Image (tube, rainbow, N blue to C red; front, side, top):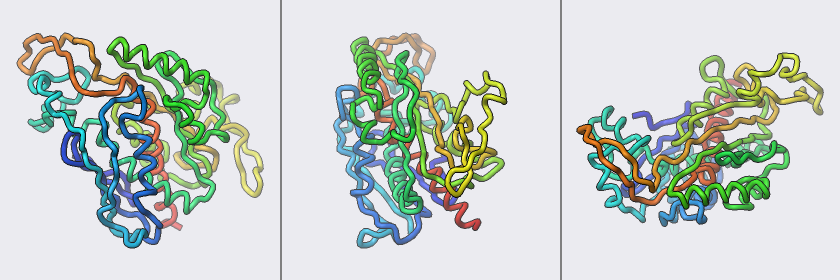
Length: 360
């Protein structure tokens, strides 16, 4: 199983949804970085369940413990082990799914691949696996902030179902603005409509998907490893590895395919002591290498597969059954996915920055 991500800044996640604990081991973080649980916990708090009526009621504090890799609050350059206990476990909620693979879940595919599957909660395919990613991403982000003082990685909800936010202004987007409402959309009027859409889906015992936008500012030109490890390729891999993500686009994305080159090209201009671009249809990356402009990408997340409605399906023998799944799940994963996206972006950029440093 592929549970490790990264080349120099590596993270290996571990644990199942309803096991004793989940977490990560970070290998390659440089020594001498001030680091305690207090640096990691804020992002885990943004990801944890039970934040509002829009999220799953599963009650988990998701408190992280650093088991190794630091001494007196400073990294040693050795592997950093991070652990978060699972406390609110209810494996009995999944008894009905032992012989009935849930529609659009990974139950069937894990069983076909490994000959066995976790008996409850999706195991490694559950979004609870992303706790380790978020914890590791918080470490990567702290190192990036120390290395690039003006850097910032901010994601937000762009759309929920048919509700779309206006075009974002990247240089004013902050986490404080994003977190000003429970749906994590920086536009207050649109956020109210998104909340209504999620509440309607919940009332119908259904779910709804949407899109996220992420803006990474303050990173230098030169990051990325052509040709197979282009920066956008690594970002795409990182984002598409997140549960429920079904699409990735950078810069102009699919809309750029409908433009002419004369309109789509990003002319170079002088910006202070360096070159920049007048427009940013490239999304901050050209030829697989960052050009110093904000890195802007979007991802699409499908509706949550677990819904309260009874569904017609078959059991493992092919016998028709009606499945009504129990358990506690989000009607929309978008608000809690924001810190996960930020974490994966931080892991990619930290890895790329370390590769560039060792090259020079």
